Image (cartoon, rainbow, N blue to C red; front, side, top):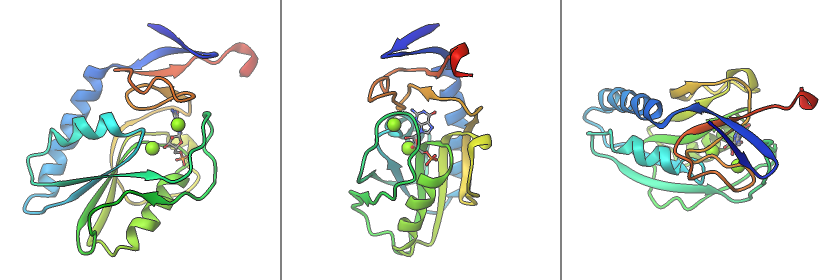
Amino acid sequence: MKIQIEDKEFSCFLEYEQIKKRTRLLGIQMNVDYEDKLPVVIAVLNGSFLFMADLVKELTVPIEVSFVKLSSYHGGESSSGVVKEIIGLDIDLQNRDVIIVEDIVDTGNTITHVLKQIKEYNPASVVVCTLLLKPDALQVEVQEIAYVGFEIPDEFVVGYGLDYKGLGRNLKDIYRAISLPSET
Ligand code: 5GP
Ligand code: MG
Ligand code: MG
């Protein structure tokens, strides 16, 4: 199915049923990995809000949840290299096992900044769980990525939390931009 958001056309790429199935498997793995632990699951807003909601419902180990945001927002579709500060953290992370939940890792710059700041609180451990990863776009190695929903091509995607110009976050499925002949 094709949809239009502002000036861009998108086609369906990952259906919610697939996302849910994959999320269930990630949850099963986490339940094993964090048996007898009490991790803090931190979602990086806004993009991860739906994934976070579905993921934590699959967890049977006790958890605490927290939500952070990056202080400056840049619209559009390209990842900027601007350093952003995490705000909104309301749990002391000292000696805690932390799971950072992200919607997407593209160049890896954003998550690298987030990890650096989280580590300043001296957690016992930190890993990243990202729904989407674009291996061909990665510019920095991120060893902390322990859970990946889907590896996807280096294309712009929208839906299930991810936006294009602020829109499309509420779409149940994930869509990818259809590149026009003039853009390729
Ligand atoms: P990175 O710093 O890893 O390059 O990019 C991270 C951020 O860029 C994501 O959190 C997201 O906000 C944005 N981003 C990267 N790729 C995409 C994409 O394909 N679609 C959308 N909607 N945002 C993206
Ligand atoms: Mg994100
Ligand atoms: Mg965005």
